[in-house]
Image (cartoon, rainbow, N blue to C red):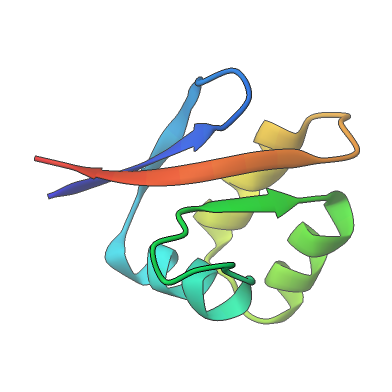
Length: 80
């Protein structure tokens, strides 16, 4: 099963996540409900994820997706 990360606003695919990367995001970021699959990120949040030991590939992917933006909403989806 593949886990894809998307820009929630544009729908653009940002890449694939490993189970470990996804679990790290789930553990570190706030979910409004147990079914919640989206997160709002800003540069400070991405820096905090890096400080907390986030996977280098994940952090780089998030920084690239942020570009020069002040914030970004991402979502993840599992697909077969």
